[in-house]
Length: 65
View 1 (cartoon, rainbow, N blue to C red):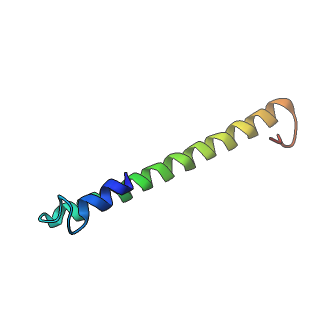
View 2 (view 1 turned 135 degrees about the horizontal axis):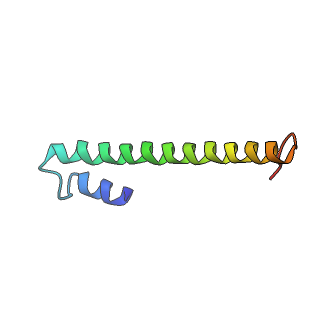
């Protein structure tokens, strides 16, 4: 995906005559990174909640992976 962004927005690429393509392409790439980071954070938090619930159910202080 990053290779396509670089090629499309380069001076010799197909998006060269359209300046807005440069900004929208990189904006979409950054927005995608933010969404992925948010998903990873949510996944990590959900795992922590499940581990704490498992520890509470078994009466243990902490569950070690």
